Image (cartoon, rainbow, N blue to C red):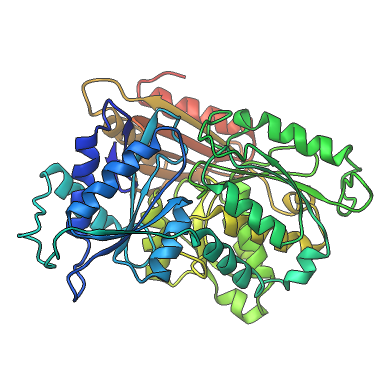
Amino acid sequence: MVSVSGCRGIVGKSLTPEVVAAFVRAAVAWMPGPADGRRIVVLARDGRVGGESVHRVAENELIRLGCHVVDIGVATTPTCGVMVRERRATGGIVITASHNPAEWNGIKVIDGRGAAPSPADAKRIIDGFRAGSAFTRKGDPGGSMGAGTVERDEKATDVHVRRVLDAVAQVVPLNRIREKRFGVVLDSVNASGRIGGRKLLDELGCRVVHLNHSDSGVFPHPPEPTLENLVTLCEEVGRASKSCAAPGTANAPYADGETCWVGFAQDPDADRLAIVDECGHYIGEEYTLVLAVLSLLSSMKKEDAARAVFAANLSTSRMIDDAAAKYGARVVRTAVGEANVVDGMTRNAANMGGEGNGGVIWPMIVPIRDSLSAMALTLALMASSGKSVSELVRMVPSYAIEKRKVELGPGGGVAERAVAAVKSLYQSRGAKLDEQDGVRADFDEPGGQGRAWVHVRASNTEPIVRFIAEAPTRHIADAILDEAQAACGKGS
């Protein structure tokens, strides 16, 4: 899988050493050559088992290409972005398959801004990879200086945590968070977020129960932070909280009459965050961005909030629109993919952006989805509002969002036919269509129960077609998906 999100594959099968080296060559060939001829590239990996070999191949190729490698070891994707900025590097490479299962691995590229490459630049990297990447020391327009060098930097996570603390202090004074002594159950899935996540929570004065924090790289459950994969986390939060008070009771429940609990789950490269409320209920990844937006807006002066802009992709819940509208702020929509969201943020000078998969992009830290930023902003909102997560959730108009996926079979053209069929169906009904990425149709749900939308697109990271619908109720959302899939000839 090669896309705007990078390169991913099955280790030893589709992701071979030759593929890794070729993709690294394409990335380096795209990176601008500095005046002194030596590219500085920050290198990290997400810690999953088997990542060491991919990391070694990438590092050796960077050395062969004459780069100075700043190796930060097991570190999160946003940490790599932070260090690209900190070291004024040419770019960065992260060995990760993000939320994909353990047998997968891959490569994410980070540009000199500390962000995912723009869609246009991502295409140049992909084109170079498919063409075999003609990068050679002799032919490099940047003028490589022969064999490269390696520097180990063990302070990267500390730098990242400090940036988050400095930024969130401008939202809520840190002492206001620390004095709450929030209880946090953190699931780091034995991967890259474990050190930074724990350090941040300790710095914020939290009482932490840390699940899956070993350096084994063995995922204790499927790594995508979805409800079915976080049963243990939900149970642990509920156990810590003991019992739930009646709805509407401030900061309920408290296990000891003093501490309000919350659960956080990171994915392997820690760019996504899922949240569990104090009752042990998984609230859904869509709320992560909403709570971050509310945290930022509630800290602004009224006139600044009214000028604020946020970016979200087409598959993200309209809850962000409701949250922004409360303060008079504006939301712009983009194609799916972090690079597309960052591009939309840049074009619209957005204060924040993200995706409904638990990804929060706070440019004050780094223009990359960042679970540490999301955790800090959630705790800041809890501290400033005096409300628990469940109470904050009840303040936001809720919708039912349902997601399905259909695997792409042999023969090709499945995704294109699905998009065309859904477009034709809803175009005939006068729906508002957005074709930036597949097709999204917004329309009034028959029966007058409210607005709804459906989005059909090919995944950037898996060989599947995604069907996503949001409506006033789960029954309506499911019916919309049934209809969309039937239109595509996939049945219900």
